[in-house]
Length: 300
Length: 168
Image (cartoon, rainbow over all chains, first blue to last red; front, top):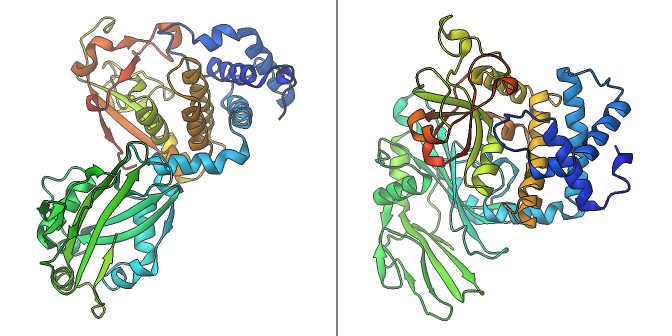
């Protein structure tokens, strides 16, 4: 609905008037001064509301829920139209997605052949992974600060899977690289509380660390060696080695690298190496159907 | 500041949408909440404070209504329409007040307008009263839906409340 009362106003003023109209019709606790916008645009906001009522054929006395909802819809649509150019929606959502502020359900889940070759043989399916990312019970976006718009950043998603046999209930932990509104899946681990001590875990990264404590092999980033190496920053031109020489023949390695040309630093971390045969044995114990072993693989 | 009359409650309750929670957390670092000392008026004894709270201000009723709207994917739900309008207008207000940048205003708009039903699901905030006691503001009677008390905490911090999603 194009509102005549806004036609003569510049873009910014029209936004302010619409916002004032919206705020004036929202529940008001009356505990503080009216917002500046409302004070500035009281008359114009009233004119907008009168026009909306007239065009919706809602009488000035009608304060029913249906009438308010109809007016709210017009105000929301008008605000949306003025506040965001439709051509910019995609780039804004990319920026929001990269920063980890997008709702999980809005991310696009990308499962590469590289990922599926290993993890579909380890008791997870495409649907499990998609569901865990889009409808997680918990999630965490890591490395959100100082990363440039197209940088790869990490996210962890956790979904609780309840089994009739309590011993087989577990969490599915999905690790992804976040690129704009896409989540590129790197790993998906079944974490059984009977195998992994989750008692101290309060966020997904804690659960991943606890999992790596049980199934990991030492890995070194620069001069730091551990089962799980947290992100560390290095100068742009540093020669940082990532090594997992003690790993068994079949392993899964992951580590992230992000660079920031503004600060001339790059970050390497969230590095771990999983002993896949040991993990596979644990899955079999829980009755998971396992496919034949696949060749070793490395993910970065 | 502080509560007007009567003994202080142990807890305050507030029902908010998941989207509002996320936007306030991500862009403001604090939450503006409207709360009640009673979770569910209908379950209280007749003479208990909060027992006469009408559904429009009752955290349990708001929670149930939003939960139903989200579960049934009700496009015409009045509370969701109101929330969408309020979040968009708050983005303009916060920008006007210098609290957020222009790109952030744009982001809030994109997040709000691309929201799907799960984003509008209700969350119940539970606040130990003593953590917010010095900042609780009583809603004046003309602005309340009944004689029962209602409160505003304008700057609730993340460590001052728990979030629960009771099954319906």
